[in-house]
Image (tube, rainbow, N blue to C red):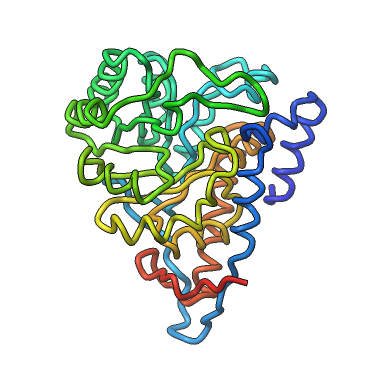
Length: 326
């Protein structure tokens, strides 16, 4: 299936079920998602066609894993959208993970039990485990250590959920989450020898603390799909500032990325990889595990072609000068 066929089919299924609006879970006015998209669309490319006449190579390495492209699912957990459909006999995250494995990518997992995590890992994709900021620190430490023992490639914590998540004008939640101090985050980092990720960095202020005081190996520049703060700064607007401040650590992005051109913009402005949530959920709704694998493949081919058109022959050769603001 083509990109448009996958998206159209997935949206149609959600529309028929009356739950299409759950795709835009931004807080209060949902302005952060609109502004994020508008800023992304304001960035254009130079074409740089004359060179060695070779196609670009999209391969990269993240967390010690060689990937066909720096494209991965965002950290997924029990989805209100998927749960409302109730179309799958088997746990849907396992099916989703099998599609990720087929595409050769890394599966990111959010809230899960150890049993669920193991069944996801059994699908064959390398796994990153992101732990929620539970009020109970012992639970956080248990999940970090359990995930490491099971063989995940990296662990981290969702700092953009510390002050709860919010969709529309709902009451923020879930109530078992809570804020964490720098000292507490240091404790979580010290509990593992794996690469440690802070997901939800959206300022140079937090990026510097993540590197210098917490010892994070990787940060994810994210607004939690819009469920953090209304009117959040666009991801690609803040990304170059964060890259300049902490060039030594791995920087990933999520929230609002939909096409290969979006991914190339992020890579040009400082990201080492891009995570996608909503788009891959739509692909799963449309065609299950195969839809996930197909969409990851489509995005990889889009990135390959657009890298070639801008003269970027490898992922490490992508440079910010190919970007031109309107």
